[in-house]
Length: 297
Image 1 (tube, helix red, strand yellow):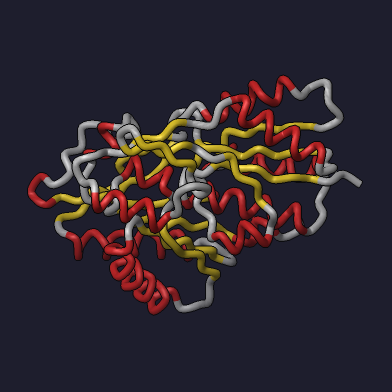
Image 2 (tube, helix red, strand yellow):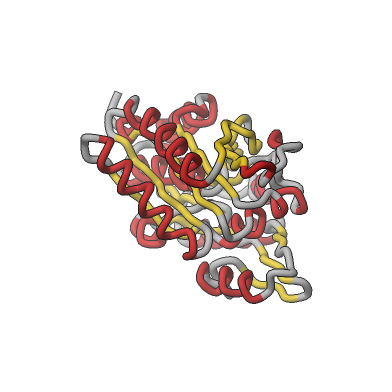
């Protein structure tokens, strides 16, 4: 029987307890504050990262991706641990060279008795977390490598199976870090117009907009409720940047709970430092998928 490992990177938001329960391995990105370098979720925690952002508002932090040698070490370790297959699920190629590094390392492992399968999920942050979780659940219930390959191809091909709406208080971080994608040209703050962003074809795209924070949060909640209504078994991920956004997140979650009219599974927490570098601390995101995707066909 094959032993299957699941690996992702630190652009993936997944509650730590869920990641540990499903034994999800991480390739860490580096986080840089000026000349200071940290390894995401190894030498800097979510809380430490956002505290450092608050203490150094003049510094826009940046990230560097894992290198091929980092992936090679991880793959070799997983082979030594007895894994026969590794699904390596990563941030969109249009946002990072992480998947390219994973592919290079996988090519260097071709002569080994282990199958490495790097995947450009087209996702990042909470929706990448949902992607990884859906796959992790399939591994947990003992599906074959081929069955999991087919399921991953379905998630990649039909990107509407996982949806995210998010907003940032300023586009400055996205612009300066080159992650603005198709939302380029939107002037956040103009006449108090707030952006509602999403991911489309692996890029950040302007989905909608609203005037003022109250209208923004109502509209975001409405968009997500509409998506949840189409799910048999909704899974909602509520995520925020620093804890100044936690109260806002809580209010939106409560409104969704009141209006949804049926139970749903909930993940919540701070977005990872790798994401916070590019969005700034004032970030709020809602992602949704359908757990019925994992029901036997």
